[in-house]
Structure formats: structure tokens, C-alpha cells
Length: 213
Image (cartoon, rainbow, N blue to C red; front, top):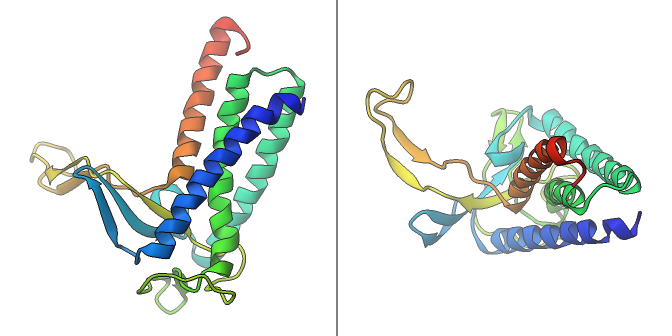
């Protein structure tokens, strides 16, 4: 059983390493809101996300605690389920798909757990304004962090403004509005969750036709 999980867990570790290496470089070298243009349709744009994937927010401090705790529980659940699948003889494809989802969940949990403790700057929630407050300058490593455990913010940077322009008037709701596709800014961990879920859905469809893969 453990042998069957060596490759999937190795995939998880590699993806988490890539995710964290890019996040730490971005946070240690760019100011919040600063961008590096790679191409006309791809930028590294530094933003911080106190909430869910793709820049969504929810619930202030209580919501942040709940979300971070849920991520920790989800990681434990995924690992236990992978152990169960390996014991049942699941194929490498399914286990690797789960390992990609695990990498995404684990990558963002690290930010929530540790970044508030090891960096001196980050978004902090203002009870007065009822919103997360931005900061200026580049964050530095510090033993006096900006937030307690579970309240660190997730670092996002992958931005793909593939198309920008004013939509035609006949488009419902957004007609005549300035529109950017793809507007959300995300990170490697977010991508892992999305790709892993797609692979799991695809594998479930294939399993219906051909059996275990």
C-alpha cells in the first residue's frame, strides 16, 4: 500500500515545492499590486487573498479561521482516502489525480498557517472598516509576524488578461462594460485543485466504461 503511494506523494511534494518557491519569491521581491509582464497576455501580478481560491473573500476573521481549519481537515481527509484507495488497489491515475488536489490544498494551507508568522507585512482585517487593509513596501522575513497562525494570507500571482475590451451592447448584463478575460488572479495551488478535480471527473467517466484505471 505504501509503495503504491510513493509516486503520488512525490508528485504532491514537487508541486508544493514549486508553489511555495514562487510564492516566497513573489512576496519577498514585489510590493502588493506590483506586476512583472511576461507576455502581453500573462503577468506575475502580486496580490494577497485572505479567502478562497481565485481571489474570493468570505466572512472576515471568523470566516478566515473557518476556511483555514477546513483546509487542514480536508488535507487529512484526502490523505486518509488515498490510503484507503491504495489499499483497495486503485490505479496510479486516480491516486496521482488525488495527489494533485492534495498539493493544491496543502500549498494554500502553508500560507495560512505560516506566512502570518514569518513575514512582517500582509493584509490585516480592520474591524473599523470591515475589510482587509492593504500595506506598502516589500515584505521581509521576521520573527514578529503580521498575523497569528491560521490568519496568514494566500499569495496569488498568476494573471492571464488574454482579452481586454468593451463588450458589445447586445451582450446580456455586461453589454457596453469594459471586460477582462481572464480576470481572477490565482496561484499554482489553485491550479492544482482545478486540474486534479478535472482529472478525477475524467477518471470516473472512464471507469464507468472500462473499469479501474
